[in-house]
Image (cartoon, rainbow, N blue to C red; front, side, top):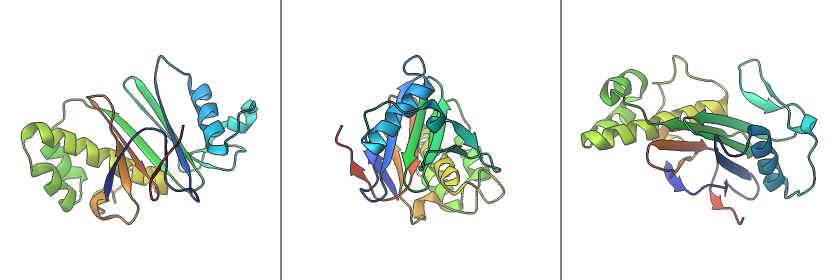
Length: 186
């Protein structure tokens, strides 16, 4: 299920998720992470650097060294994005580059997703390709499985977890995988 979002979104009050997005020349990653944690905790004080130190699991998934929340990170082109959640979360950001949408969809997508990409005009094929690609990456980041031989075996169009995309400036697609969505109030 694909759901359009706006930046800075909670998925639910019980399973809240904060999404932050910054241009590369804007906030540095540490400052962006600290801002997201403050929103996540509704905490306005100083957060020690050690609390925000990010490490990688055995499978390469980023996580906080000592902060009790799930984390997902993505960067592409001029942007850096992250999601912090009380539950597993995945985020993926892609700058649009010329792609052979049909060929890549056939190779990496489930037949249902491939049909979705092919069922439109040439310009929309690229947009649909990036929606599916970022949704699949967000999902495997959430699960911690990464891109493997199973990437084409599942369809993000029929997963039980919502896969949502955030509308950005032209030429970028950002997808998030988590739970039910509610707007943030900041």
